[in-house]
Image (cartoon, rainbow, N blue to C red; front, top):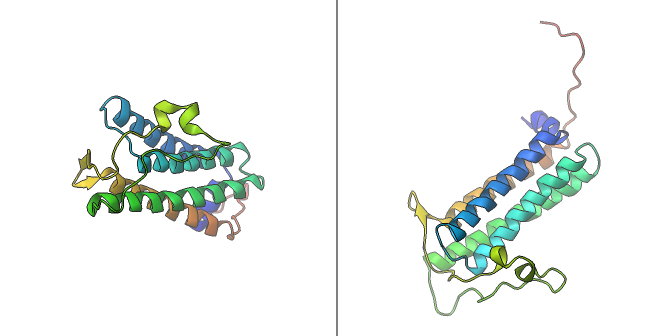
Length: 177
């Protein structure tokens, strides 16, 4: 399996699949926000940023998968998936154990050099409450699903990282059956 993941990490297809998966999740988030009219909270916005990080990792990896840029993509992927798990877990705790002493912020805090909420308010402005359970499927809330999703992203990223240590099998032109 590690050899297979190593081979995949040298091709654009796997990186584009990673980027497309994160993009599809971003589109689902925008569907929930703009079509189903569910208000995103600050934690939702931060989780979106982590998804954009995974998508960015896929794009970076697809640019030059056979160059050292692949390592940058793997590191972005690992960091984004890890932060996504931490954010989704914290969001889940807000929902499962509501407390007036532990709440999320009213507005997302972006660095002054990257004011995403100013540049693209329809995606990055929070207007909901982190403790609201506005949506669930199969008895799991959205942050619980995201915790699992980011866990899968992280597991795959770790496996791809480990696969980099495995030498790929070189295929000969003549196969012996």
